[in-house]
Image (cartoon, rainbow, N blue to C red; front, side, top):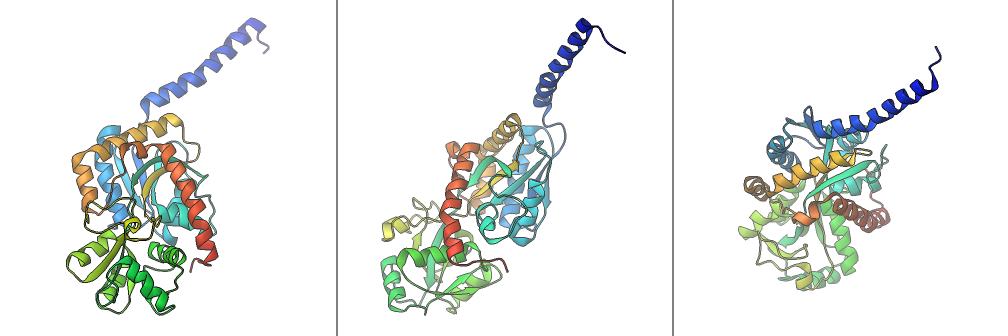
Length: 329
């Protein structure tokens, strides 16, 4: 049936008006069902606990349940890939770290792009490390440690949590920054590496605060420097690498939340607001501090700040990783 021109134009105009109206309605109703945060590691680990701490407060802010789904394997790339392939509707998010959204892009042949297949939602924490050594090392400060390493090339044993782990990559950066060379000993996690450092079986680790600080406080290992831009509130007596004689040596296993590429801006905005509110909550912040986390300042929690950080980190770390020939095992 052929419609008169006037009636056709009227219907066409009505249909065109429905699209923005439906988008407005969706914006007002999002979220209308539970939101899933995919943790790309096993339950009970630091990232899983971080996600669950955030979820408790986000549930109130968004008015919907927050489901935590653990999808572990391949250094977090299985879980991140699942989110990259999800519908860009704001109902499936990824919580990840420096390793999953920077290192994996240089180490693995992925079916997704760690930068361009995600929309940044919020940067959460920015966790730097401690350079620590066994108690019997002759060096008592960072300059002394570097001098000892230079005097004993290829003799020192540096522990890691595995090939391509933060301890491994940061150890390579330490070598490059000091023109020294060590032998890496790869363990199945940071805890067994720290156990061997305490036992004197290895010489040093660029270690996270969670595993290293208790041993520093117990006097079981020597602290040489903190790798943040300012001293850690948890260890204010330990100098930064800048202060200890190695300027510009910064490392961090930061964490953040992403959505699939193409998720609408208004959805990103609602999610970011809920996360910002959660990170401002004293109880949530304390739980994160108890995990050894350093919550980033409010102005760094914006999506564009996460994007800029990720781009800068890829530019910094990919050449180091590739030059060292690190490949997934």
